[in-house]
Every structure is written in structure tokens, then in C-alpha cells.
Image 1: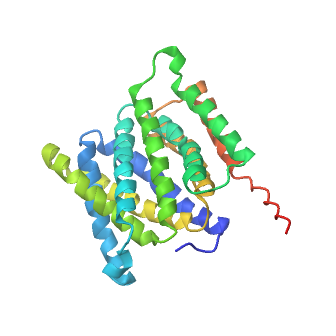
Image 2 (image 1 turned 30 degrees about the vertical axis):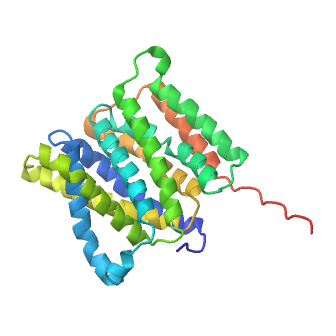
Image 3 (image 1 turned 180 degrees about the vertical axis):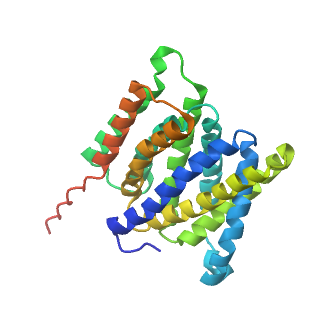
Length: 291
């Protein structure tokens, strides 16, 4: 169900993703102070499912979310669930600015996966973006110092998981609507998360219920924006449009939590961002074969 390619429409949908993900990072930091990550994820799915029901009804009911690609949905959302768990857990270990800076290696892995499995072209600019991104993440994590923070490794693992999920989502957009992709994401993750949630359940305070509602709204409609953006452009074009989230999230961490980023982290993030900007450069047209 691909739409006519349009970078403008992709950018507009990604602007929605950007705003909602920024708010969710703050809400995630607040809720993980008191609640288990499993519980946060489950409540998010339940709220998202409730919010999605009117949209499904207006789109034609069960027919709007029917799929012939259930195995792909299961794999994609299983990977995404564990990546999201890692992302929320990383928020409890390192600053939100650093979490997002490391998460921003996602375009690196997405470019590799999209080229390998989706037959998207791997241009010299994309290769340059990958190299810069790898150098940037090494500068942030600094494995040579022997003081790698577990939160950094968890955030990096989450980024790789998100990239796998992104490549699979792009594949699904060829036959599935954004609404169907979102519906199956919520349902699969809701079923997966129920047993551990029941095991660790504690009743949230009124304030935490408010933050959980924010996470549910942002988590649901951010992915609707993402799936919609992927209908208008390749994954290797859509994902780098998210580059503003790094400085914006770092600014939010500084203003709200007095988090400061050291110079190597800032430089590493800058390299990752620059690589992503290179990734946006249009590919040269492929010469036509002589008849």
C-alpha cells in the first residue's frame, strides 16, 4: 500500500514522530523512577489499543487490520518489544541525551539491513554515513577506557533492535496500511508483556497514571506517524529525518534534569548527525542499459 514517493510528506509525518518521541523520553524518565519497565510497556499497549479502536472502526473494522503476513508482524514486534524494553531501562542508567545519541545509530544499522534485505541502493554517501556513525558511537561509549557503562551497551542494543524493526516495518508497508502495522504492534506486544507485568504489578499513583497516559498516547501515535512516513520514502531517507531529536533531547535533559554531556559525547553525536545528513543526499540516477 505504498504511496506516491514524497520527501515532503515523509518529513511532515516524521515531524510528528519527533515531537511525540521527545515527550515520551521525558515521560519515560519520570515513570521509571517508580515502576517496572514491563508494567510501563503493558499499560502503554493497553492505552494505545483503546485509543486505536475508534480509528479501526472508522476505517471499516476488522477488515482494516486483516493481514496475510502475521509471521512478519510477530517477528517485527517481538524484536521491537525487547528493543523498547532496553530503551526504557537505559533511561534509568544514563542521561536521556546520551540514550538518544546512542539510539541515533539506528540509521546505520537500518541502512545496512535495508540494502541487504530490501534491495535499497548502498551509495557512497550512505557508506560514509555508516563510517561516521560507527566512529561517533565509539567516541560516546569509549570502550578503550575500560569504563563502558552498561546503560550505554543496553542503549546500543536497543538501537540495533529498532533498526531491525524499522527494516521489517518498511517491508510491511508494501502491502499493509499504517493502521494495520500499528494494530499488530500493539496486540503482539500487549500479549507478550502480560505475564511479566502481572508478576511485578504495583498500583501507580495518580501522577504516574498521568505520565503513563502520556506514554500511551505518544507511543501509539508516534508509530502511526512513522509507518505513514515510510509509505512516502525509503527507510534510509525517513530515519535520518529524526536527527533533530538528539540536540532537542539533550536540551530537555539539561533543562529538566541538569544533565550535562561531556565534549566527547557531543562530538560523537555530531559525527552521527553529520553522517545522517550525508545519508539524505540524493543518489545519482542509475544509467539506463543500452538496448
